[in-house]
Image (tube, rainbow, N blue to C red; front, side, top):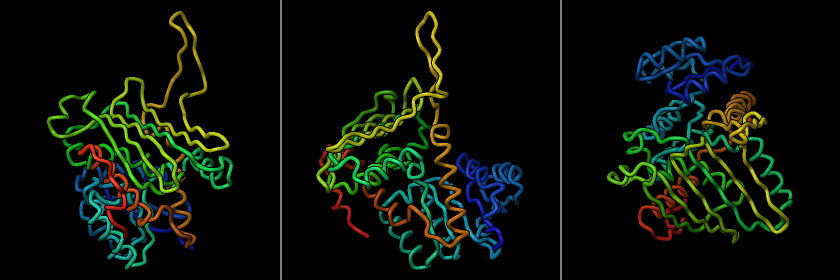
Length: 334
């Protein structure tokens, strides 16, 4: 079978990262890079040996088999709809949409057209999360009782991005909330508190940089999620699952596994950002996309699955903004 011909839609930070991973894969070729900013398109296209364009329709031409969507979050749903209507296989970064209504339209477009679609929740491809899932399903923990999730970024993005991001628990927290669903199942209700502690000026815009959410799962387990947009010590991602037979702990705190000792004590290097911490996961998810699409196997996670993670994130954000306990089912079903 010939390599699949792919088009990148969006040539920013994630677009470049994905294009680099796919370059040289036998299953596919990135042949076109589309971005409204010509300089961005030219930069990524030159690196992977592709054509550059500023016209969206060039991503949907007959010579393209699949598209990789890394445009700003507010455009995800409309890009997915357009790609589905054009009959192209799709990889789209999370979240699938900013609103549940737009997300529903994207799901309907994908399922009506029958095109394969994968959503970028890369932690589902991280070796530690994959192994934890296998152990849980094998009964290693017995009855599941709880989960603790921590997600802290080293520094916040710009104000204009935050204003259109959907909120702290939709843009950032959705990764941890998707992990909670992936490992423990569906959440029945959520409560959250937070504030603008690291960046007080965010409060003027109704924004949060710090939040703590509590989760009650349909299987009876309970959990907490801590999210923050700024830490002095770097990127901090942790996940701990508790069960009647033991505990699983996911954390990567050393890079490399080397400690240095001097008159000031002990020192070690930590992952500084998400690309560094999840480099293996990002590579695995894109390789899986290319391989499964080339072999005609289902893509994962699906757009439908991603909608339910968006539903949970929207419920959590609403709880954060109102101080209310929110039942997730009130946000409807697909």
